Length: 337
Ligand code: NDP
Image 1 (cartoon, helix red, strand yellow):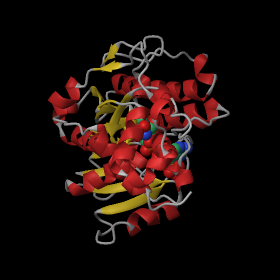
Image 2 (cartoon, protein in one colour):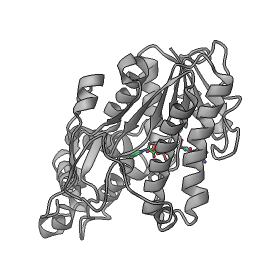
Image 3 (cartoon, protein in one colour):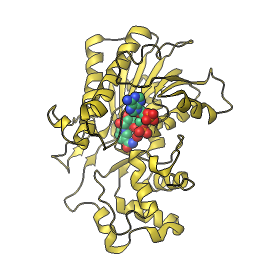
């Protein structure tokens, strides 16, 4: 299958790219600059540009941003949309989070509808943020659930802004398909915190993607005095999530479904313990004893999950936390701060 992948310079998309190529698909990925595109080509010296190429889309929030990127020869049959801001440092939620997430998603779907009639499947990376409800912290969640964030809350604070950006973008995607009845069917991946090895071009540890920052911080000693609290205790390995995206491209039965792709529960305390056991040379930077306690599960319990659909419809199997942490640490060890 010939696939357009958005945001190929990102943590998750870089794994989606590898998995697509491994499974015999040809890929064009969008990036914000030709320099970022060149890094991706350089990492795959054996592939021709018929198998792997890039297109520059510098800002997905811009209207008609994807209008030419969706056109290709031979034409695309599937699109995977990973590009969306993921950070908690926004000062202007509308501009930095909501516009790129929502306009990026809707603009891409419009461009496909207008200019790429050969596309049969679109897979969108949404998030557990579009599923979980902060006011019910011990409920068991599935694809049936939606984050209740409101338009007013969306503008208050980076966490709400991010949650809303994912929820509103995903809702807009389902609405587009329902309203327009386009040439393609939609599948959505809803991962919680994504952990695992970095395969994208990364200049320094300071620039590591948001979800792996807690691993970097523990490795570098920033949590030694007190293990940071975990936040939401659900994770998935990036390789399992990438395979989930590709299976959602490949499997007809994925049409019209969202998939809560959860590998299991985790705590920052467990991450610190795994790093200490597997990398003895890092042990003296890690919290021990009472200093681990703030990173433990809360006494009242944490979010539950039901990932049955992803196992039954896609056939996904999930790696244990240890694999994600060990391989993440290995991928970051050679980088400097
Ligand atoms: P990254 O920050 O590594 O990747 C984000 C990608 O989006 C990058 O390629 C980035 O480009 C691109 N991007 C962001 N804003 C724009 C914009 N305005 N115009 C063009 N490109 C843009 O994060 P992840 O790989 O973790 O995230 C990928 C997707 O997965 C996102 O949709 C995120 O919401 C979702 N997700 C991630 C989770 C996680 O724990 N990692 C959990 C749940 C969902 P550039 O590299 O040039 O900045």
